Length: 85
Image (cartoon, rainbow, N blue to C red; front, side):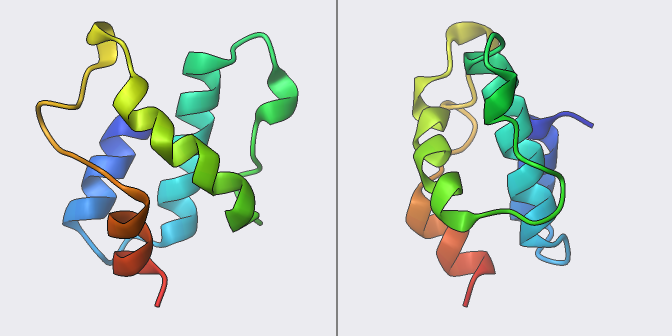
């Protein structure tokens, strides 16, 4: 399952843990935006949430090939208010 599908599934199914959603999402976005920089990869477990925030804004910057803007709109507040309370 790729990062986009995992993110959609997580948004629709609150039982999926935030660490799984964000780690899958970050791995997907870092590979998509920074394939040359493997040091940006985030471990599957043990996410530093302060490092997560900058990548969440990337979702609005995806190119047409991976354009999810017409399907759903995400924001920092939506993700964090729903899963981190």
